[in-house]
Image 1: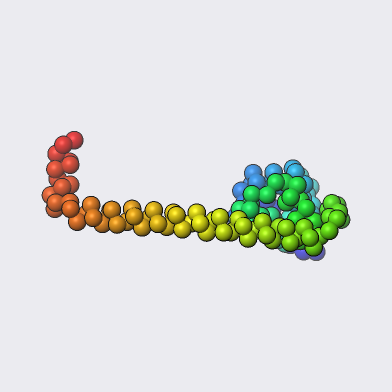
Image 2: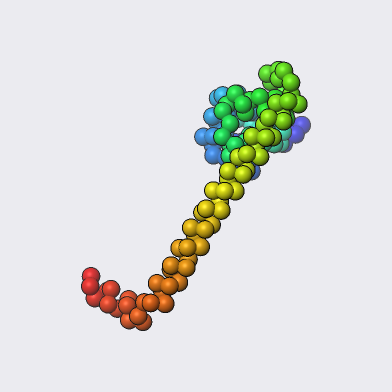
Length: 141
């Protein structure tokens, strides 16, 4: 029998919140393998792997049905929906992921430029600040 984990440990391993894990269960993306006698959710490593895969989809901005479809291709379960042309859909998802990566790179570049500008301004402001400025600002209070 494989090791079974409670939801807190799974959250720690996956970096997902308890709320998100429960939501994914509610919508049927990831279902715990078992429940304890007390009703606690119990997860296996396969469940953790599926949750990790699902977490990887979050930045793509996929809708639940798209996530369900992609999981059916990448990590099918007996109750997974049938996908008409898995290779074609996987190609579409890969192209979507590439576009999203490019958008994120552009956004990151803009943030890095802005951060650099802030650092430059901060260094300039510190060079212009007189040595006794903290004493003066305290005296104004």
